[in-house]
Length: 423
Image 1 (cartoon, rainbow, N blue to C red):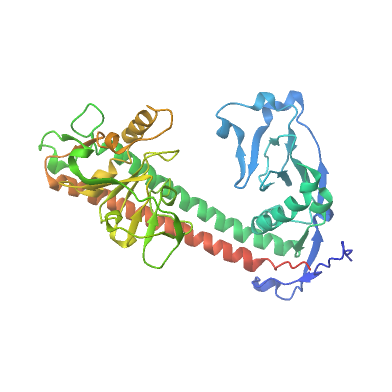
Image 2: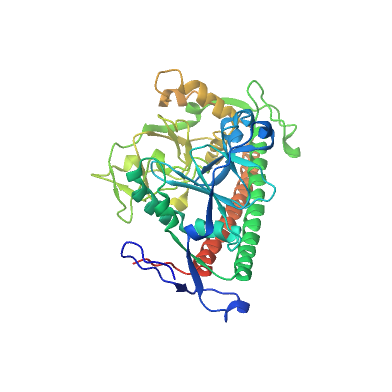
């Protein structure tokens, strides 16, 4: 029987909400403490074996090779690193979060900084099952361990860690749950790879469907336009009107009608409106700050300088904030112009232009000077726009597919593990 700790009692037998048919008559799950299934290890990488070990970093997303983060070979300096072997768990204590990773990769030779604590897991617990359970409760564990370990400085209080309870079924049921979730993870990984291929395809098209610097025709051109001649070179200011800075208003709780878009509401990767949370501007509203369909916004200062956003009808009634600059496109298809703010050429221009002053920034007059390429006919604009819009639809559909799979996994995690309640 598990002892009571500091007046707290732990449920000793639990049942999950979802269970595979062959285990429905197996009874309730057992409750164990981490101290029962962990064996602390402190093995250092031996000097003559350093070439065999890969240094890894441990964070919210699990394991990452340190050479991928720091872009250099670190294997020559791992002699004093801790070995992080297969079938073990690594814990680290940050200022605001609990770093934890499970090594469930056979024949792996990983090592981590000496600041981490490593625990071998006894064979009575399936390592993949433990990984998924940690994924489910990491934030809960992190809050508990962070608060109670803070009194110990920067180190994890092992008494607190070892006292943490986990639910454990029979080993066959553990293996079944782990196999189910692993197969779902494999599917999610495959779908993510498809998404990355679509994004890479779009990046390649953006690179080749528009002329490069110093050129007046693109490398790739639809057959029906190959004899149409050179593209025209325009400045963004020449094909824009109604150029202005946004309103200087505080963001307040969304009023149900008027949305407020700030730099932080534009997703860094997708350039879509992604507020967290949705807000409205405070005070008297002036319609001159309302966005029209096809308006393009540019971030003018800070780390996100150069970030662009194209306003679309389905997004609704938007007011834009002061650190954004609005351009209303004329005599060109807005999406066609916006696409040119996603190219490598644009990123190079942003990097060069924004650093001309001490504080990174690009003002409206500077944005007006950005080079835009316009083909001889509107039909070619329409063709390129339609091509890339259809690819955007595929990327959106693939992204939604992954999100649904992740939601399904979240539901399975919550259903396949019993809920732990500590009083």
